[in-house]
Length: 223
Ligand code: SAM
Image (cartoon, rainbow, N blue to C red; front, side, top):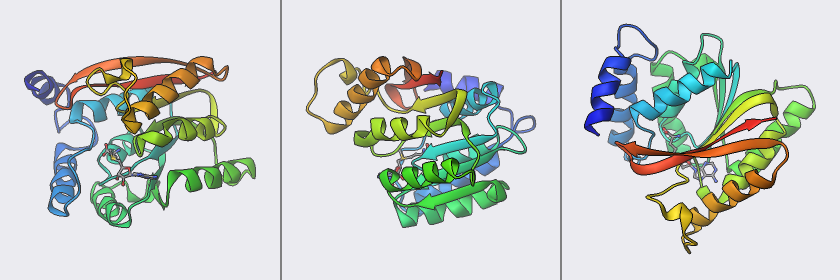
């Protein structure tokens, strides 16, 4: 945690890079005040997501799991024209996110779609198929872990070649490696194993330690 705080304070000075630390702090304070759980990505993880989206030259980003919009604000700041579609099942979370995202000055570029991911993603896929929506270059999956693979499977069909897909919280203090009964671990194992067998994707698990304890994410590239 000390290393995260040290490094972030030097690598994300509020004067130089969007989003400003005040917009980010506002989002975290508001989501706590509104009773949302403290399960957003850390500042360093948010910056990592943004930098990865920039590496992928993302113009259209899909997120599943908005919460209070903290990671959404990071992603929307991957570029001045970047558009984000973020899917959230909880109406209260979506409302808090809307306010935070507007306050961060990126409201016109963020579309929050209310509903369960398993229903909303196929709707988005249909919109892409009908040419009503552009394909995505970056996908961040951070919602109900049991559906990780279902989200990746549908999202890949909406992605351009070279798109990056990140699935959060797959390591869970090392439990990924054991055959746990926990459905969140089962969801993490399923997405890892299925990506390994899927000819459309090439992936790896990146283990992380820091403010969010020992965890990790799955990073995959669409072929
Ligand atoms: N990405 C957010 C961030 O870092 O700021 C954190 C997301 S939080 C870990 C997970 C979110 O997914 C919660 O807001 C929860 O309501 C939402 N969620 C849970 N089940 C969902 C589902 N079936 N479809 C869409 N969203 C869901």
